Image 1 (cartoon, rainbow, N blue to C red):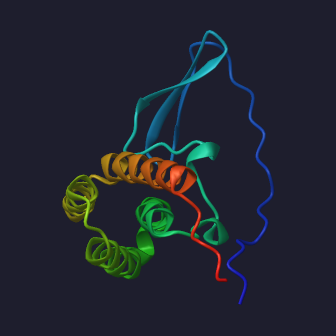
Image 2 (tube, rainbow, N blue to C red):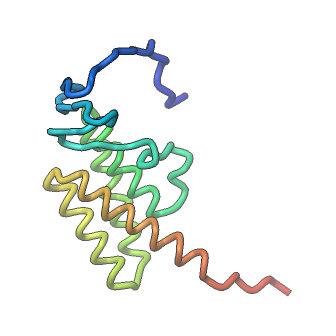
Amino acid sequence: MSSAMPAMPSLRVRFHDGERFIVNGAVIGIEDEALVVHKHDTLLKGEDVILPEQADSPARRIYFGVMMMILDPRNHEAHYGQLVDDLAAMLQATSLADVADTLHIIFTLAQRGHYERALESARALVKFETELLRTAPAPAEAA
């Protein structure tokens, strides 16, 4: 089963400096040739979005879960349940107090609906995990 979304036709609209418009509830304006988000719940840029196949580590799975709660609110319960499972698995696997604290923070923020802040914490967790794996000594090869 493919998780790819069906292709939607592109929409091209021209705006002038100072104009404002609304996209999915976010008030956006054009100022000095830049998009300015005046009112928003959550804003994700391309660099903030990962694909399912990129969720290939414990921290990345947590990040992906929070991201999906933002991007797919219709399936909130399923994403939340998976996020809780992923948080619990990583919590059980770690002995690092700072990691455990971060997992609790992500859980609390997600539980309260503060998804953008939960995503920031998950991003920090991914960064820590990446650095930890980069600097960890390679396992000894079997003789």
